[in-house]
Every structure is written in structure tokens, then in C-alpha cells.
Length: 144
Image (cartoon, rainbow, N blue to C red):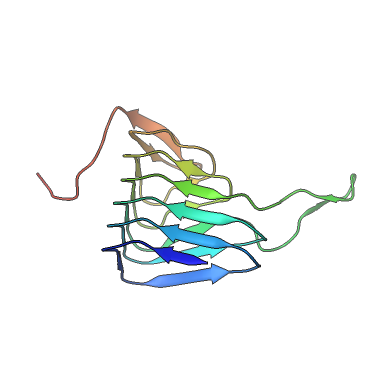
């Protein structure tokens, strides 16, 4: 299922639903320059909040699309996990957001970062893997 809120601008990219009962939700007033959003494995979801701003070459994935098996245990070790992006998040160009990641409201993700873990509210995170480099911030679309 794909849900797109009111007054969104989606300029480019793709939506990938790999299995059944997957969901991608985009909140009101969100803008996306170009992103590949991949919901993989049954029942997994990507939720993007309201008033988010995604640059270009963004990749958001709930899973790896292929199985990795621990040979000693003979069990799969890479199950898909939901991705949550809260309201008013700015994601810079060429960012990858991987399974199980979440980004708190009012946060900024720096260009070229790879988000693999939860990022709290009101911070700037950057790097591979992304880490908080500044907290107690917010952002605005217009240049003041």
C-alpha cells in the first residue's frame, strides 16, 4: 500500500514493494527530489512524517532483499525491520537509511550518511554510520 499525504511534491524516484502487505506512507507537505523507497518482506513499512524534505539519491530500505544464513546455526540472520522518519526531518543528498533505523523529529541527516540506528529528535547526524554531531537544533526551509 502507498499513502501520500496532501500537498506533497515528489519529483523523482521509485517505490518498491517486494512482498505482500508492505506499506509506504508519506506525510502531508513532504517534498522528495529523488528517492528509492523499498518495503521488503511481509508486513514491513516505511513511514515518513509530515513536512519532511528529502534531497536526491536517497535510498530507504526495510530489508536486504536476499537471505544471509549463519552457517553454524543454520538460521537466517537478516530479517527486515520497519523504518520510521518522524515529522520535519531534512535528509541530505545521497543518504542511505537502512532497516530498523528511525529519525526523530526536527533532525537533519548530513549528505552521504548511512543511517543504521535510531537518531534522536532535534539533532544533526552525519557519517558512515551516522552519528549525532550536534543536538538541540531545528531547521527551516527558507534561508533566513
